[in-house]
Image (cartoon, rainbow, N blue to C red; front, side, top):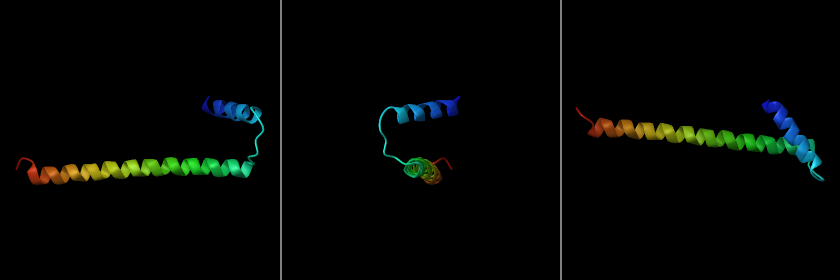
Length: 65
């Protein structure tokens, strides 16, 4: 279902007006979007790890003994 929707929307965009994008440019844009999403996910993971470490450090210093 998802793939069919993707193909249909790509065709709709192609048919909606003149486009000067080549297949190579489209691939580059797709790769850029994917890289950006991966960077955001990586940054989110890093922030979660940092917060977890802060919690451990706080509890080891101030938690019940």
